[in-house]
Figure (tube, chains in turn red, yellow):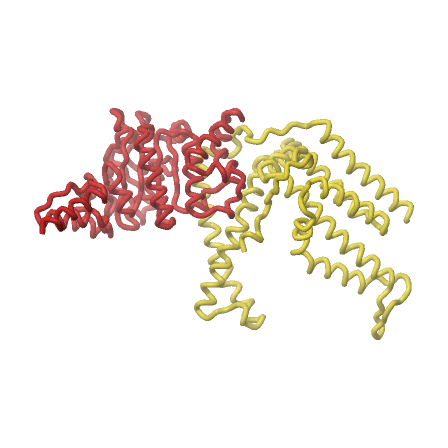
Length: 279
Length: 268
């Protein structure tokens, strides 16, 4: 459910960590409100730097970033930041509170919300993320997946319109990764959020609406995820492997059975069954 | 390992001690510390012990938890006991080796000093067992609030303390992992002579420090992205309210200090 307005508009954005270390050069693109965009690319191509620029945690060296119509400047960053939530890679390093409920409440305290509203939001979002039974737990008592759920709850409780996931699933096991993907998919379906995920996870990229490929400090491609997974050269440069169902669908296509690449695993399996039955 | 190191872990039993204002508990703890320091006789020590046992019982938390809290400091207690035995030369000689003798006064003050330490640690556990870290921070911020007059932000201080405590188990866990990784490459600290252990410590401290800085950087980003601004006003998730019971709680400690002080003066 994409909106009509733009969540982000980047115009000729450049950034360097000093004169010797340019990272981004003349990056221009825009992201619609309510869409889910994957930022992909090889390690060191500037994905996380771009995420920090979008989140207002770093300032551009050149160009402009416009967030929901407001230019992201030193003067406006505090006004814009509450609209953007960021979930980082290591769930341990973003756990600020001593317990789950205190961690979720941390951002709300900064907004000077009354206690009743904080308690309500903490409970509501903890239930939503299925961590309601963990509210009094210390971070050392939680698994990586549970900690990442806490991080997402803490961000959603602040009710931002934009959520950036910076390789948030990369330190999780397969099950927790799948659960996080389900959470992000639900967020997308709710239509309340613009989602940007920096990821190497093929399933996560497939679930998004659009993939922007970064390479050598610029945009190498801006395409639909299934188009990315059909482009061998791009996949190689991003060191990505298409999900198994996509590879299977492509192989079936070679055998004359056309299965659209955005189909689910079950649908691809059905097509395979039809192919086997016809033989 | 991490189960042993749950710093600031609270155990909710719903007792009345749990609902006492953390500022009252902190004040009580400071007063108890004063009482423990001025304890000079077995009678005073017994009164302090009975006092803390009564409060421990009131928390409805099994006493074994308090004993566990004091357990990690047994080496320190033994050390204090031995030092007292070695240095105090009062009373009758119980036993002697060459020119050194064990005196009844040394034995008595050694036992009192070690008991003081055990009581202090166990009693401090009342505070942490009955108060969540968040409430404790807020209580501490309340107690330290007057420091604002000399330009020190209590909120910042307590946030720093809370984050430091929060990361102790994480960093210890990481140290453990690095030790294991080094042991897997043949540098097992347990097997090494002390001199080698000293050298190895550097190769342990460097990755742990680097990692702690990396974590700190990521934590800062996370705090900033959640709108944290140093010195900006914040509302409080835990609301504190001082009640009559809190006053009685503090007064009970004042009475304890007074009794112990009187005994001390009489003893002198």
